[in-house]
Length: 322
Ligand SMILES: NC(=O)C1=CN([C@@H]2O[C@H](COP(=O)(O)OP(=O)(O)OC[C@H]3O[C@@H](n4cnc5c(N)ncnc54)[C@H](OP(=O)(O)O)[C@@H]3O)[C@@H](O)[C@H]2O)C=CC1
Ligand SMILES: C[C@H]1O[C@H](OP(=O)(O)OP(=O)(O)OC[C@H]2O[C@@H](n3cnc4c(=O)[nH]c(N)nc43)[C@H](O)[C@@H]2O)[C@@H](O)[C@@H](O)C1=O
Image 1 (cartoon, rainbow, N blue to C red):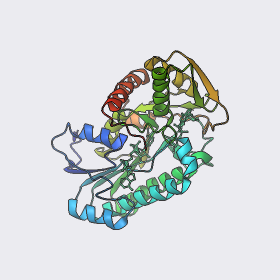
Image 2 (cartoon, rainbow, N blue to C red):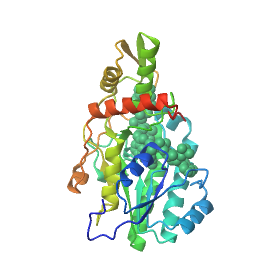
Image 3 (cartoon, helix red, strand yellow):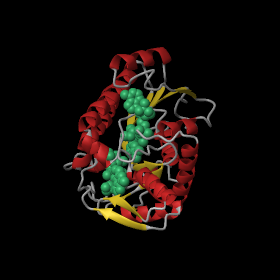
């Protein structure tokens, strides 16, 4: 993993947000490299919204690298309902994690944003240079502004102080350890659970939100974890880079795939009273491909793996629904 011979290797990596879907996948990836000592701390140890607590954690634990995979995260409904928390928590987490990293001599920091930073009507596929070229999608504007602030703060630290702080912009993610809350979650875990429960209960139909026509791209979370470790060990990474598959499909097509994986054979209905959000989000992955990373898990395979994990999480009562 630390294959980059011109870059000093990472010794002590702090993964902020290690109990989340992404943080956990990064920990799985890092566990395969015995040369890296993994540092983790749940919210009960350090509330990342608390500047003093974050500073004290860095002072005591002395990471030389940090991945900021902690955030207030949710789907279209949660983002629209709680814009205050989505902006305020995410601004604090970004500023605290980045500023303390600089104060305590962290050598490498990777901040995770999201493709919702790009303007709602940006040309597709989304290129990195589309940032700040137009208005944002209203359903996740608060979250997007906080993420833009985080990526810009990394860019400014790098520019002003010469530290290697940079960002990745993942597309919509899915995989083991996702949040399966019926309302607050993202579309993929929400539908996996809804189709599963409909099949278990023998229900005739399942309703999906919106028109079913928005297009989205989905990346398996272990592929993102590999990209994170690739970027954080790269010699001259870009200030921010898209991480995705470059392939999208409609929400109705996604729903049909999930129904097939789960074995639900009833009718799929749409609910136009619910918001569609951004009409299309698919990343241009030219830049990350040039850096030497490509996704490995195709959607059909990833869906099967995720459903297997979901069944295990249900059986072991570890299913997250916050
Ligand atoms: N999921 C997706 O589709 C996408 C995610 N991303 C980005 O990837 C990153 C990880 O997302 P994901 O893993 O899905 O999210 P999760 O909600 O699964 O995990 C987020 C983690 O952050 C922790 N956290 C949140 N607030 C605090 C806090 N104040 N103090 C300490 N810990 C905190 C949570 O802890 P706790 O369990 O205690 O709440 C949780 O473990 C985020 O930056 C997100 O913006 C980007 C694009 C798409
Ligand atoms: C990762 C990304 O995630 C969010 O953006 P989003 O892509 O719009 O999020 P979503 O996954 O919630 O919805 C995708 C589409 O799917 C439709 N949809 C159908 N049925 C359900 C459903 O049952 N639940 C949900 N959540 N959506 C549904 C839904 O109406 C929409 O058209 C942002 O929070 C943003 O901040 C962000 O970064």
